[in-house]
Length: 434
Image (tube, rainbow, N blue to C red; front, top):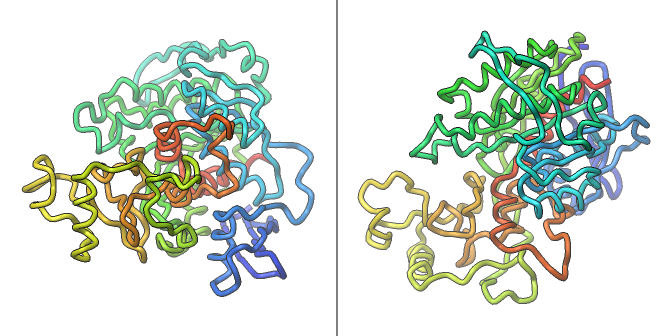
């Protein structure tokens, strides 16, 4: 199979159809059109997806599901991307297990994907492993052993292992322990779990800076995977705004597959085939514009914002009253004056541009450029989820009678792998799972 990837869209009655070609394979899927027909069909397809339009195969999916385990899963952004990739190639996904220290996040994962096993524990506690040597001389001293009894029963039965180990130690936002954080070794723990499960394919994601880690975890991971029988290994950076997303977020993906068939589909091939112009904030959230939501207005945690301090109200008003997008020094707190390193903090977003990276601080003006372009407030969790490419059909609330805290929701959204990027990365792996 050659490496060409082609994605085409068209209007068809009350739907928007997508035809995906990967080499000699052709698959059709569609989404209910809830975006109208006054824009290019590719734009309408993704906007309809974000607004909750149902996506389905135009032909019945294959009987054999793609069985997955998702570690460090949060609420399931990477699983959602894999689900959409499976649909795009005429398959369906079965969420076998999710692993995370966040019990509420696991329940969100289960609500959206029907996850069979929820492992509310540190990932390090479910696998026994030891590495001999270092760098390109690394080897597992013995085959990693899955210790959790539920997960041990799935060894040899998993098609795709997904993991997004904590990335704070690699991030440029971490000034104190950058590249040397002990949490960086969780990257190798993720490899050990995937190898211990004997998964047919593995997809790991992290920030692009992971390649600069002092422990050289990426090259160590590649060496370990190759020695464990993963014959095809690929890696690269995907950018949301280069795939038609509405934010300038980038993630690094490492993909390993045991199948060495001549499929030739790399991350670079997928990125080229799915490439699209970036889309604006208005495109993503234009239908959600509301005025001040601090009073709640009965909309729940997803559609409200906090009550701000008097100082932050003054800063937001200054931006709007003076038609500014960057807050001048005289209105900033002292710690952000005169050559501060983060000029975007207290910044106003631009309606006709993609957003900057959504983080867990999007409800706080002093933690990034998160002030709405048109109304005097920050983004709501609903709006931030849309920017992250979570559709309205994804539920962050498990129990309406006991909704999650605002801090939990912001963590799930800000820490998540954008499903759009998960779709592109896992498509490369799923294409080999034949």
